[in-house]
Amino acid sequence: MVEDEKKRYRPTKNYLEHLPPLNLSAFETEIMRNEFERLSVRQPMDTLSMKRYELPPPPPGKMTDVSAWSECVDNSFAQLEHQATRKAVQEVNWARKSLQCKAGEELRHLESTWVSLVSRNYDIEQACVNLQQQLQRYSELLEAKRDNHDNNNASDQEM
Image (cartoon, rainbow, N blue to C red; front, side):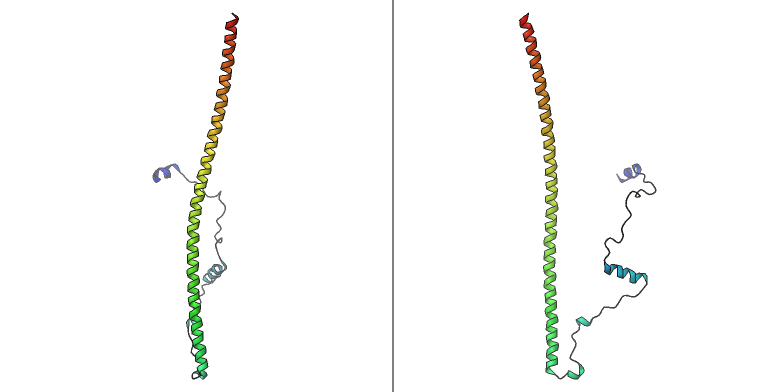
């Protein structure tokens, strides 16, 4: 089947010239542009900072200070709570996205059904119009035959 298509379709040298030029930056974000620029000048990628994942101890001068250690423990609890909140937000976003994708699929299905029903209604309307036109023609033919028949009967009675 593909071979038959290839035999029938002989593309010209530039068979896409009627199309507008391709916009390669349509989906580029600012971050992507910056990254492309960095790559074009061959700069190395910045190393990731692991600072936010560390739980620093108190400064060397306050290693024996209970309040400094208490502050560090509070900081670690705050980071733990932040991570738990972030995880909960990600789960909510995943559930939302999942529901929206399912709803999108259902909307596409419903739209497709609607389009087919509207098209079927149009076909039915066209058939009704055609039938009405045929009925009109048949009634005109019948009327003409009656008139012709009545004229023939009237002329027969006169004789």
